[in-house]
Length: 335
Image (cartoon, rainbow, N blue to C red; front, side, top):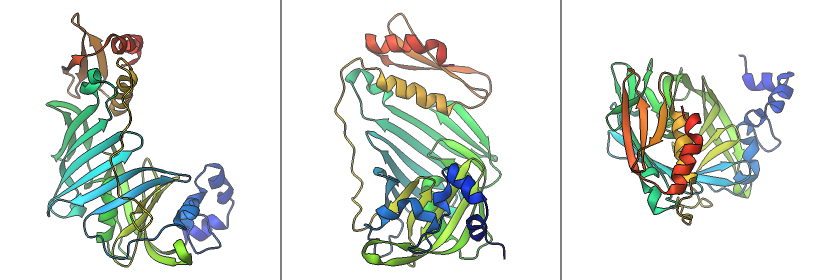
């Protein structure tokens, strides 16, 4: 049977993958068959995995090849809902609640997501929280801010948030034909043509020289790097590797996620406004735009063109002179 790992190791593709920075996903090592976690071998040698099954509640530490940079907490809320808290250092987080279509593998039917950054001044508290809702209806995912529709996406398969995939993979049988879905990445981006399938047993060295044998489930699809979900004998997803980043299930060496707090900056600092503008610019879809302007009273108004061509205004509270000066300086670049 054709084996992609042997093919990668024994052809000139290895050099091309190394040049592209993707070799750590497939490289072999002397300490076990851990091609899926090569870039994190040093970190994993200090890791002691949980000894018991985690049930429906999991805490992951987010790492890159050199450091920890955040946390992901996923918790089941009864049979039909899952909540998530995704925190990135320093000072930003997303809280989400997903309502399911019954079984988790059937995908989500609705969600609410609130993004928060630590306020840098009292005058900017109106811009440090962003809330949107979504629902699946008539084969489409529809996203709204308040009553304003900001994006729509046609679905050809169940909609699955990436934050829920560590739970979803544990429901797939080994040797399964595969699970096809549409991906909701980080609560914001929709990607079609995704597939999750069993990819064999791998061995990962951890603290004390212990060698873990884990089931590997591989996620591939349009617009995303190959992602490996490593599941232990208790049915828990211990490690998720995605390019140069990974999620590691909390064990002896992993702290419980905690709230990240940063010191407020001086009033009038436009950094948060800049973050809000950049964040919404990334959310823009084809056929929509976001622009800002100020009224004579100094109030900032955000205009959104909806997918149906109509426009709506979202008022925000009065900002400081420094904030408004920054908005004026970028006015021509917001569309």
